[in-house]
Length: 111
Image (cartoon, rainbow, N blue to C red):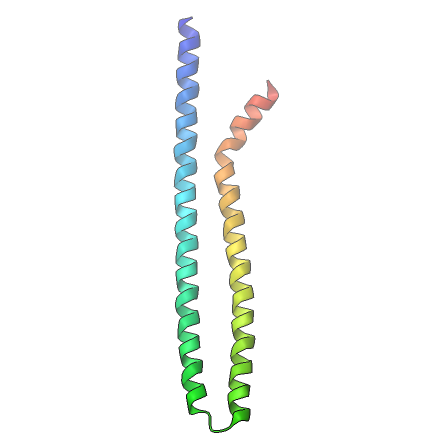
């Protein structure tokens, strides 16, 4: 009976260690995602402000349309690139969060 209690305590400690490791990974991952989103937001705002200044300085309607078209194209390409990058960050986060549990799942699957 004493051996069963020790095994349960060991299993409980392992589970807590896995949970803490997973929590640390999730925390770091969300921090990286938050930094990435903040950087993108800042860059997007700066680009929009620069384009607004260019539009106010445009002398002709054709020039204004050209500036706006170029901005929309670059903004769309930037958004797609950022969405791809965020998708990769989320996928990496999921993989890293799952890693500590791989051994545990394998251990129970063998039994």
